[in-house]
Image (cartoon, rainbow, N blue to C red; front, side):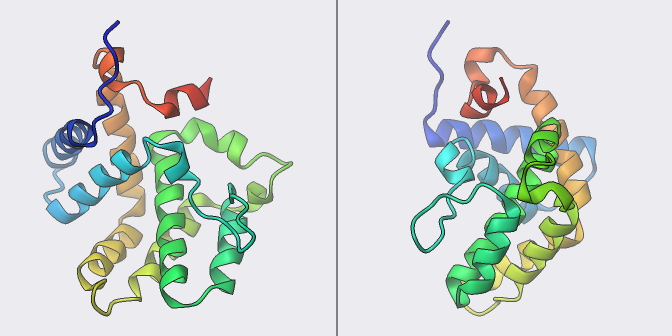
Length: 181
């Protein structure tokens, strides 16, 4: 088996092509800023430390949306915006790319047990979008649309996953695959 190419540029090209084809051709969504954002999300989240990048003030990694929401409420301005944006990304990633993981992420023994990831993702993207001064103006528009179109983006990301699963394994192996086993 050939080694996996984890070069960010190669991954970006792969995810950009899959995302663009899925959203534009299959779903009829011609929205380049959204498509670019989703492709970048997939590239960022190849690394587990990016999926779980939010830490509390003592440096402890936050792995649940409920914990991230509490942390966002305790922060000010830009860090708060970044946490809300991350919650949106986190919930969109899991609900779209790996919805089967939601059963574990929202199991009865976890704080996220009663959370609706779609509702929290929409809310978090909306809150992040309200920080619309420079340098966030352009991205705030994208975040607002992600809030409004969360379900469509989740559905589309699931379709993107189906497409990459059709590719040879050595092309698409990622840390996510190991996490699911």
